[in-house]
Length: 313
Image 1: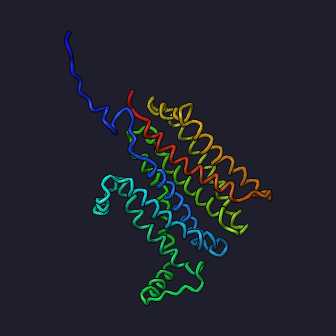
Image 2: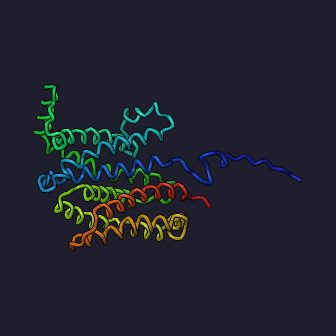
Image 3: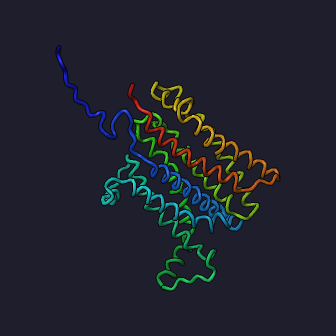
């Protein structure tokens, strides 16, 4: 009998048959980043359109949550790193073809900008606030003078941040579920919907709530279209992408995705917001929490299912 010795590394950790590198920190960061992007987008857009007084909560108060979300998200990214002491190397170079590089520099810009925006409206929470130092007062005057420019910077970078949260996945071509250009627009729409839902949840202005409810309805419709288009693209593509789509179409992720993301996270909130617009009293907390939960579940499910999808047979 002739014996053969086969040596393989496939049973080593982090190699086939499963690849599970990204854990809960990454989808949580993507949710927090998308939510912060949505909040900042609507704050900047309302100010640019001259609706600061009509949407005073969205412009002046809600953005105070954004830097907190971004800092927590950055902490999640830091804890996920294997070599934490070398994170600074992301800022020693710019690689246009690298989503990681894009994300690092976008966060470097939008995080301090969100703090500047909060500083300009700090008297909304502390009416007697006084900048004790001369340089701080001069910095505030400078920022007030160029507030419109700051709003444009925040608007542009919030869109980039929202899209980047999806591109971070879609750049991994080795994962069939992530290998789609739909994830960028889908995660942007999800972040905008979450931002609108957060404003609806906390604002006490009825007209402002109705305005952002209408916006949320439009964005939810876009999300449903993108999800449908994504699965249609998968089912019309190669066998491995069909198998990736089947994770949500009869596979282990079917129930959580269609129940918690599509039905409870999109359809039910849309129906509740429609009822609210027709003067039926619906507690703002209910549709808002459903939208936020659906947005969070979307990122967790796409993250975990994407790591299970593969090109192996």
